[in-house]
Length: 460
Image (cartoon, rainbow, N blue to C red):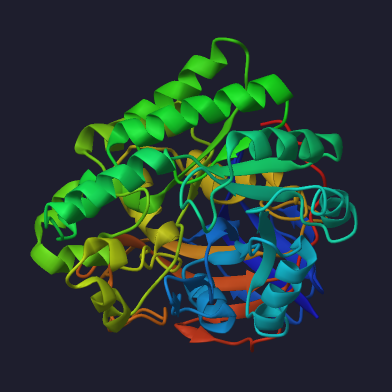
């Protein structure tokens, strides 16, 4: 099967030009002007942007949390991602304390295998690092192709590990060429504030935000930076939200340290004023919470300064009925919001269209950097001969609005209801096959492929 995309404006992290792309089977064969080739299918991309399929390295599909499961499973979540121009996601396996990493992998595979519409991989969240789990690190990296390991500095008693475990894990991960991801917030301080607000009968969603002040994230980010500096282990801070935390990364650069930073689309465009909407604020209860406008300005600047390398989603949707579990107590509201389908269009509309970032930077933070950091480049994350034919054809001028009535995520509200968008995903190609076209999904569950990843070698 062959495919010829003609006359598109091709955009990568470091190039911008008009040309054709010739795809054979699942791979890009040739890129050039006025290609004289015959293909089984032609697509005219005149007037459209053509860029690599997006990679969202932070999603939670079919995830057990607070007595329920996130409402998007691997089928609905990866399909919705494709509709939004994201051809690959990296989900998080959560080790149960007392169990092995292998048991966690087996559990997550029982939900994901043969159910994904788009491509996927896993991070391994290590919640119990000990002498029994230590030897599993090498196996995960070298045999399973899972090369990144998530740690939590919060959620004591469930997910959190202490600094002693963190150092031991870092040393083991470094030994075999892996990467440590971290949820960097001060769990003990947050737990104290949650208990304090509950005791004072301050139970609305606003107190979720007030229980996680900026200092809880700034302090933990600084501590994580120090631990990675000491061990020499590559480190990646997930969902960084605020000026204080990014300043911890800035400080680390003064000693020539490199820390990878991810923010999420919501932290760039939404702010904490939404928590004042009585219980409707539960739609935006996530951890860390939304911050202030000054933090948005810091994050946009951080993207342009190269301090923030990735824009993800932390997609973890819950239906409104599930959110109502915390109607009388903010601490019982399932944490997370839906965004897997909206990330690419929102970042284009709010970033590129409004002059905050360039087109090349847009591709860099949504496609190329995730592929480089997580060991998939140049197979994923770029348009080049030999790369997987993961391609988005995008109309930069079409306007529309986000709405739960038209999105494909399995959730009954939108965090961005009525949000005006300039720019629309029109066609999505996944490994050489047209997956999305004219608002129709043309691939079935099971087409999505698990992608084994390489050791951390890329420098960006």
